Image (tube, helix red, strand yellow):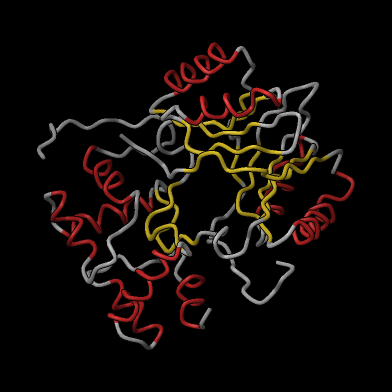
Length: 172
Length: 153
């Protein structure tokens, strides 16, 4: 497939990816081939050289577009069936320091600052916690409580009841 | 689960080789053959233990996205959840135990099209979509440490 040689500038973030990077992302988002020469197979499919595919992926890692390349385990299938979104109300002036400490905990898979929606939603720090049981998750929540100490002005724990839809990143 | 499979799941969540024969490189590290690595990964893929082998993208670097939440009356939950899931822009949709009981992530090529999806959902449901975009990411993502033996993990 021949795409026009235009460079589509991607919004958000300081780096941009071009059309070829975009095609590599689309071709790999369902996963790399599990074959002897996966990047060669990918290159063949895209009409590129394998070296170019690898170099571009390396550059996307350096630029922070790709966070990591690797095996993505299915936590749920591996017994991590309890997942809870823990949300915390912490002082704005300390959120960076506290967020970084919570984000380092090895059972936290995502840790973000998000805006409050007052009055009903006072929480500004989100940490996704995974465990093999609700007891395990609650144990982890106590660890986060310990990290936050008096800066924890309120929190809530939202267990997932049902996964209604889950797909990977889709670029079209 | 045997030791080699545990190591395949835990030790290669990042720094997957960007080399001509990555599975051969992994084989060398594990002291098994390339053929065995490929067979085991295919098996773990088929059994569902692995979602995929590939790139994990940094949020907010590609397009625009937000976490969003809605307080849906229980008797309408099924229908509204289906409606929300039917949008191509919605890639995660969870029912959670809270007054805000429907939580989803919407992604679009730019913030204007993201807004129009969320406005459309509001119009079609008559409910407010609370928008909770990421302000800052504090997680240093090194993968997730799977603890195979510890029941309290």
